[in-house]
Image 1 (cartoon, rainbow, N blue to C red):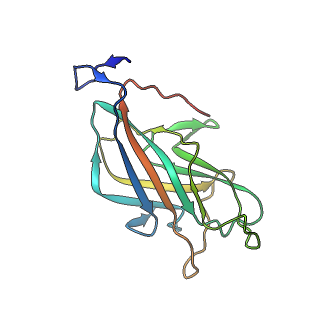
Image 2: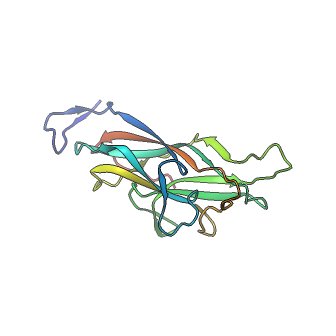
Length: 186
């Protein structure tokens, strides 16, 4: 076990300690459409009732652990979706800056088959931790948007008055020590 000092804490800290915060979001409850997205299920901003105040002793990481979104309009082939979040640091994917939180593979809705379900609901098995931008000191709102990974177009769901399942996301925020180094998994 190693010990390190931080910017605001000159005394060594134990590497193994951390805390987590679990947050659930629903595009239909307490959310507003993201600018440029007419479909709130594809892009929305939520205001937290209790802002998260970041400690400068640490870095923070975020990961998607559950997701659910409407795939009723995706019936022809398997689709991959990018789920993005404005809190995370920019990363490069295919030589483009991106705020990718998670990439969800192989979604298809077949109304005649019991194998494919709508909405697409899953617990994330292969969790990817992404660093929260260190310039962020107080998290009072979070924006999410979902796009087709191939076309870059926003998630397409039925518009009112047609029924559409809300987008639901659950993220885990974890505090880590400042010296933790990001290692790309792509």
